[in-house]
Picture (tube, rainbow, N blue to C red):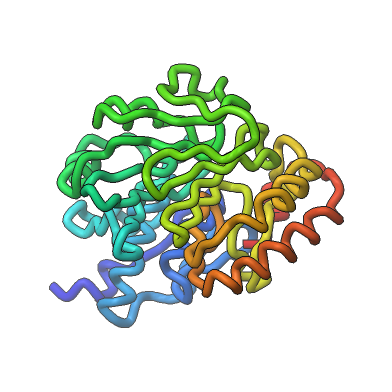
Length: 295
């Protein structure tokens, strides 16, 4: 039976926590309304159907249903290639507030995992088919829930900054201080306290910036943004961190934990990052409010 028929209509159920992951993957089909994601229309083409499968298998609450059921595993597109070297893991976890995670392929054929999806042995087997995962890099405490399970599965080293060590006390490698640390050839950790005390961004090959929750691409603003209303540690420290690291960062792909991904010329990102640092310096602490984030 053709899958684009009424008995396989898609919907988003009320378990949605408004994490934004589905809207990133199926724009034009899933939108925000009344504090959660809703389906705006049924898919009209195979490409749109594929976008909804990607959204469904990323959704941390499994709220995206097809014909009243979760889509069949045969339609799971993950790991999903974003660029020649980067894969989106999908299967976002409710224990990381639905954060995105990534695999980065290195020239030797091994992979680094940046933040983690929910633990899933079948997904681990698919990742292993891409090559050995040697390191699991946590950007901050909010995304640490499954780090040890993934590192143990692959015999990989688990990394976190000392500022957030309480979230992964059994980490194999602890980043210390405020200066950059080389993780592997071409990959550098840059501490960026603000969202949390131990927040880190990872820069790879002068091309890829894995920013965790320190900053993201806002589709609402069509610009870089910080999630000021969910800055747990200090928005003042975040402003200082951005001012410190912005001049030395060069990349053309922004790959955050939450919020939009974006590709731009490196010079354009440098200009926008400097402007973001200046805007953040004008912010003042405010109560935590997830609903205030402009994705």
